[in-house]
Image 1 (tube, rainbow, N blue to C red):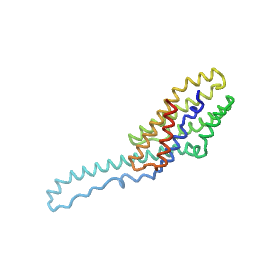
Image 2: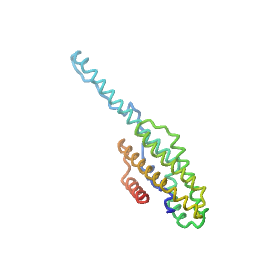
Image 3: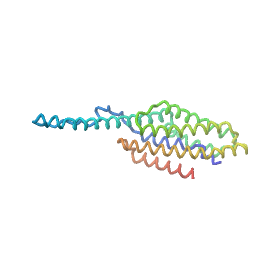
Length: 227
């Protein structure tokens, strides 16, 4: 079993995205929707003929504005959930590197379990806070479902890991049997992250070049570990 896989890379990838989520408060639908002014014409006949088309254009514009507002709101909700769970804070405090170091130098089951318990606490918070957020847009619901599923899956794996004696041959076999699930949750997480970044870009919340480069680096590291 590769001990470094136990980190699942969730912390690093999620922190990369949560730090790139430099979102502002969404403006209201009425202010974001494009206003279509009725043309000034002299003929009352021309006015009545063009009015339905103008109303239709305005309705379409208002609908687009509401959809855009809902997606921006969902982006902010997801970012808030990740921040509340403490992913970015843990990453900034060097927890990912510390965990990997402790796992690499672990000499007993308790050495490994102490790391797993710390990780599990964060993933439980992540699942709890994400589950508490209700999405309003179709895209937001898709991203939310993918992220929540991967985090809950990782939580389940870690909970199982904490019941295994990883210092015993039987425990190592059990842990290795969980690796396919670990890889699947990592793949789902990467997909969710990419979906979320695309959603941000489509709504004018493009991450900085540095943050996007950091995310690409983490996703590349993720892909290499699940091969």
